Image (tube, rainbow, N blue to C red):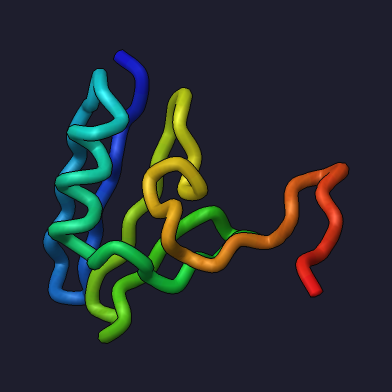
Length: 82
């Protein structure tokens, strides 16, 4: 198993799914939150634009991998884009 994705929502829904491919994880996550949700880098989760759903990932992939279209802070060693 490469990654476990946990989806929770404000109405109490909780889904935990294992993924062995990045494409599979991206497809489900994008369906649940959209392709570029807001990402809380300090707390390591992504939240839908309407604030209803939240996704956390645990494993070989990061939120940066799952949601490449979201804005990302620079990685250590990267320079800020101007």
